[in-house]
Every structure is written in C-alpha cells, then in structure tokens.
Image (cartoon, rainbow, N blue to C red):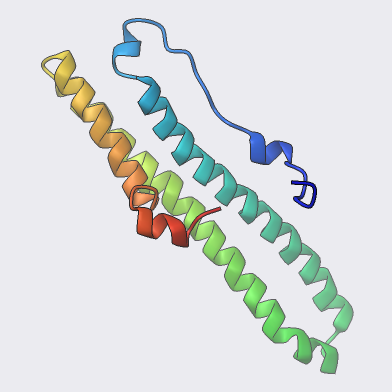
Length: 149
C-alpha cells in the first residue's frame, strides 16, 4: 500500500531461536510463536513507556518555563493526563514482566523440577505459555481486538 507508513525496525523486530535436541522436545515451533507473541507485547509496552517518559520529561521543562501563571493552569489537565498515561504504561510493564512472566516462570521452574517424565514437563511448559498469554490478554480473541497493537 503506497499510502501506508513505512515499517520501522522496532515494528519488524521478532525474537526467534533454534533449540538443540533434547530441549527441542519441550520448545516446539508453536511454543516459540507463543514466546514471540508474549515478548512482542512486552517489548511494545516498554517502547510506549519510554516514549511517554520522554514526553513527560519534556513536559517538566515546559512546566518550569510556564511559571505559575495562567498558561500553566491552562495546561494542567494535559500535564495530568500525560502523568497518568505514564503511570499506566509503567504499571503495565511492571505487571507483564514481574506479575505475569516472573511469577509464572518461578512456578514453571518448580513444576519442571518435580516433573517425573518428559510428558509432564511438556504439559507444565504448555500450561506456562498458555497462562502467560492469557494474563497478557493475548489468548482471548475478543479481548485481543480491544488491546491490539
């Protein structure tokens, strides 16, 4: 499409890996795609957070330049909105990395240590990936449409 904006490098960035045997038994191509979906969501959320932080930093300089006059009062709602957007983006990244991936990863490590055979390890890994995708709102197609990139 000639009218479409050009694809940026960060938009084309995709994690991929080649897993040697016997680990390849646990990390199938389907599992790699699930990891790609999860980390793409986290990567984009972190990118938005960094952009908002840059805007917020510039906004702080503008606040100082405005002083305490009428201009600052007029801009106060915009300043507040940007601050709330930044807080939301930071909370989203924190939730995705620590509350979802970090907590689920710790549970996966425990499950893998207790797995009596390869099938149990495979089931634990699949459950981990499915839970991560669900918690990142990537498993429900109706929700996915609401939070799509």
